[in-house]
Image (cartoon, rainbow, N blue to C red; front, side, top):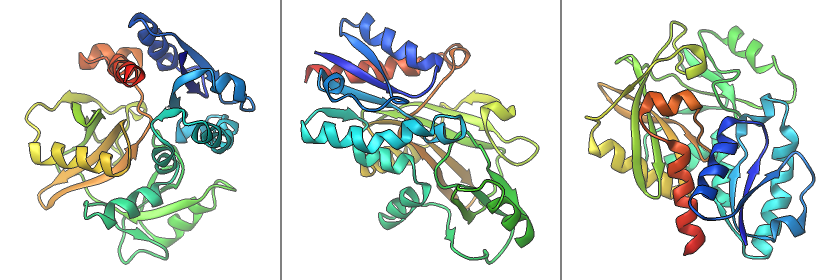
Length: 275
């Protein structure tokens, strides 16, 4: 039996993680989530690894997200393990659910607002999304409403703006209950932080163990075995601003960081495969 890799786009990482698994001596195959679920194909897998991103909705691959519940149902019924599990997938596609769950457990997260926030600026972004798509810092109620109405059919959330006063957002890659990589990602002129917006990355070797230990616990609380977390640290403390149960990297990131995220994720999948 094989490891099935659920994918929704032609990412470099999709093929890299498959090739890494095969290079470790385990058969692996890609399963295109843009097509209707095939029970026979899914059940030929001993283990399934999900590479279906919340950001698919903005990259023309919403069908892959729509197909996930049926796939999850098949896998659950036949007791085929998925990395990350169903719970983690549903946190991947709802920032509201993620923040409410973390807040319930006492982890520091930005406040969510149902109505106008008590103060501006605030953050407006899709509840299901990623890669900073359609994410804005807004400064008044008019801006907020214009953005919330800008993409029909998309649910936007409004949350507290936490200023990254040190000029960076902390990115953590967490696999198998361990923080494998800590980076500082710079904030751009518009106040946001993302690789595709021009943010630069630097190694963060002296990060406080208090932060990394708490991040690992938070990921465990969300049932995320392999994923990433964005944190803002400032003079008042630290706050979890985003969590991903599907983490990604480009080929140049691997050289830049001196760390192969896809290989680390593949190694974890192989470990689970043999257990």
